[in-house]
Amino acid sequence: METEPTKQSIPAWKTGYGYQDTDFGQLLHGFSVYERESFLQMGRVIDYPISSLIVREGYPSNHFYVILFGKVAIWSHDLKVKYQVLTKGSVFGEVSFFGPSRVATAEAETYTELLQFERDKVLDWFRRREERLFKLFVFNLTRIIISKLIGANERIRELELLLREGR
Image 1 (cartoon, rainbow, N blue to C red):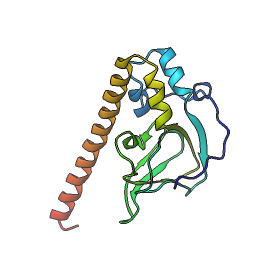
Image 2 (image 1 turned 90 degrees about the horizontal axis):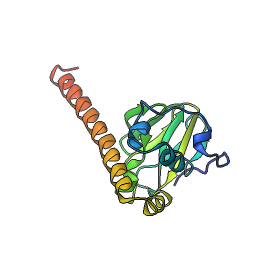
Image 3 (image 1 turned 120 degrees about the horizontal axis):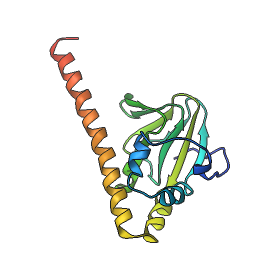
Image 4 (image 1 turned 90 degrees about the vertical axis):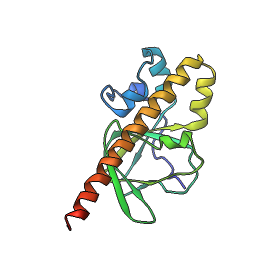
């Protein structure tokens, strides 16, 4: 179950948060300025106090998020294993486009402001645009997911080396 937001809807492009060199910038890579602004208007700025649960592993998946401020810990709820800590500009929950339930738990590690996107609203937005824009979005989303997989593989390799060394 996702925590209810505590802020009013604000057009995200009016917030002034930069995103050029982040996952979020990569997500919108190739979009025109107009397309970016239109896309960002679908987002809703919400805030979470420190230690707030944002999403829980195994629960329905209807949103994805961009971190505008703060830190979010991504972890396995059952195993209590922290996978990573994400910061400003990071995208998470993007797997919601491909599956019905969350694959990890997300918790605010500090006071955090997020830009929340509803999957159905985003898909409807793309239905009213050229097909090439949706293909570009999926391509960019896939690049972000691949980047995360590469990072996970590197972490697994590091842990394997530590195990071999007996640490």
